[in-house]
Length: 410
Ligand code: PLP
Image (tube, rainbow, N blue to C red):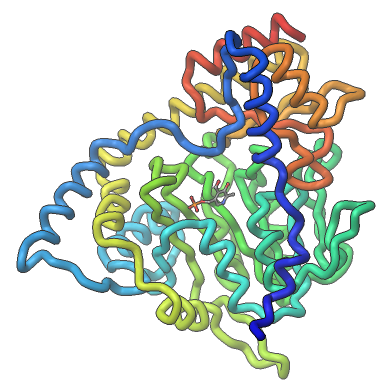
């Protein structure tokens, strides 16, 4: 008899996006003449930039030749890509990272999800609330979460760190000792950031408690303010306690192309039960070479091209396009009387729903009265209740029209 991993039975069904889709479908059927504007999407919409396309075309031609053919590549990623990552994403910011501390992958979702493999089951995990659901669900699957409590909508063994307007979206240090801490800045879903001083508190906490910070910087390219760190390694001491996840998805429109990387500095250690230090870089390398055969050469060539002069320029234009949409939405909502967060260093705009409404009630009102689709904050965790996420990944015209409708309709 094949026994299943029963931890999977502890997962809560995520009704968020399927419920949204159902509600939108029903409304469209009943109101076929209404034009719905979708500002709920978390996917980019701009096509891959020419510099990356050109690199991919070249790579395609190359592998069709006798001398250019590529079979299995290095599991950790080709050196040509790891070297430009080091130069551009780290050395250029004064951060000393070696190419063998970089692991190229097919997505930050997989990396954030798979990283739990190298940690013991009895680690205490802290997540911010609301949160990108992958951190929580992968810990449920691997048996670290305990049982789900309906009253609080939380798992008994997970430490939830609320991020709301009350604490200016800056998570407070946990009162109990935790071992693994997921931080994501710029944050999905709130669009908010931490400055260096705030982030330093977490690095210091991790050092004092021999904890590890799992730092998701998937939206780093959207940072516009000067004092906001693009990498956790800008913080002194972080190279001893932090693992960083980066992705080309939102940076370069690679959500369909698939490429990302994780950084595990060689000084970052975990511990055995008897207290011996073990290099997490070594463990992850072992895991990677066992379970992964690398990202395709063509895709890694495209990722390399994001660092060329042309590539950087073209990507910046796309990011600026999304950021301009974010500004239109944020300022428009403020003019309409809403309290709004995010949208400055992020493609996500997080707004406070009007007094007396839940996130879902606001969703219905927005859909029915002004035909706009967003994402209810409560879908990202209990502390997301009372908030709502809009994204800047639509067109400029839709962003402008959405705001006009909201101004008229509310
Ligand atoms: N991390 C965060 C916070 C995200 O919001 C997303 C995607 O929406 C990802 C990671 C996934 O990135 P990737 O496309 O590289 O898997």
